[in-house]
Image 1 (cartoon, rainbow, N blue to C red):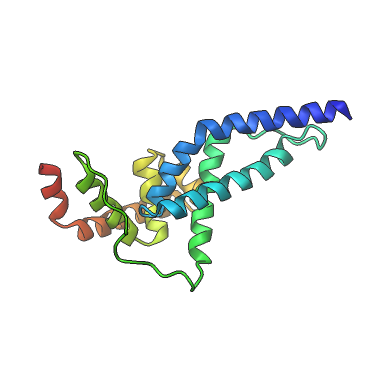
Image 2: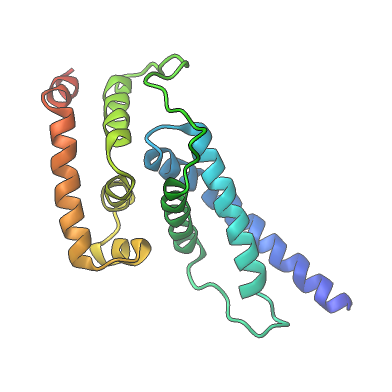
Length: 181
């Protein structure tokens, strides 16, 4: 009994170490996926970590004879993207999106450019947004992106091309103007 308690405490300590090292990265990706909605990004990260903990306890249980998660950081990102896509499918009708955020914008050398890009990303459909975040923000390969999104590499290529075209249409000349500043 004492051995299983020590093993459980060891698993929990490993999980806490994983979350301490990955939470900020998950949050940044979630912010991009949600188009800058920091509250929803926090919820997605919490949901991801809760799901990861359940999986972690089950997969890393020496009593049940399961194997360990090979790449927990990559697996956590996969869970985050799938959680985001699932959230978009079951979005409650009680939620009302607003056109402008009530907070003031961050000040900095690229804040206007960053806000313009986030607003344009927010206007893309969830799958287009996810493929762009995975490919261009997280710098994942086509094959990795296909695995995370549960689709074929050809579909990832097509979706990436179409999503970038939509993004260019949304941004128009505003991106060139902001980048020149």
